[in-house]
Length: 54
Image 1 (cartoon, rainbow, N blue to C red):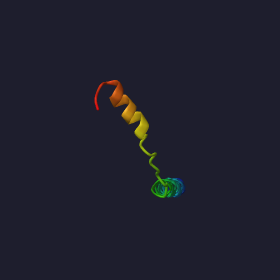
Image 2: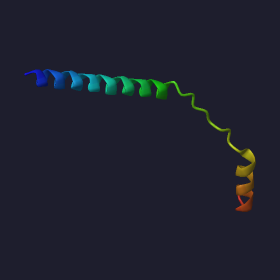
Image 3: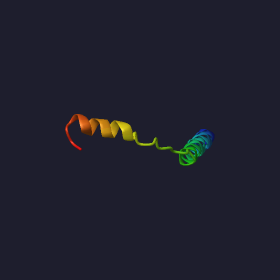
């Protein structure tokens, strides 16, 4: 009977650790500041001129 208790406690500790680490990673992902590079206007104009589109 004692082995079941030890296995249960170890299992609960493992589940709690996985849950904590998962929540930590999710929180880290939501706090990440995303940035968008500006569109290169010169390249867009050059590519349309080369194809004969104005």
